Image (tube, rainbow, N blue to C red):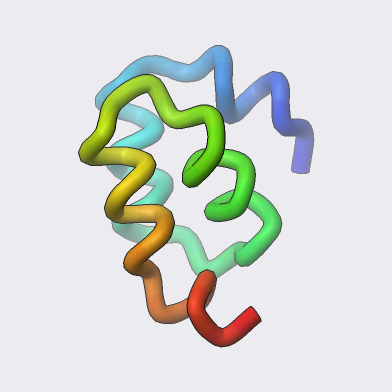
Length: 52
């Protein structure tokens, strides 16, 4: 997973990624660098992220 591709993506795409992706590495990146609070909070609350 390329962090730059995640951080450079649109707000909409980041939101869809955190809602549908099961990659703890990607969720960690978006939890720290997501464009919106909604993206960061959703990434932090993800069950995948909590298991890691």
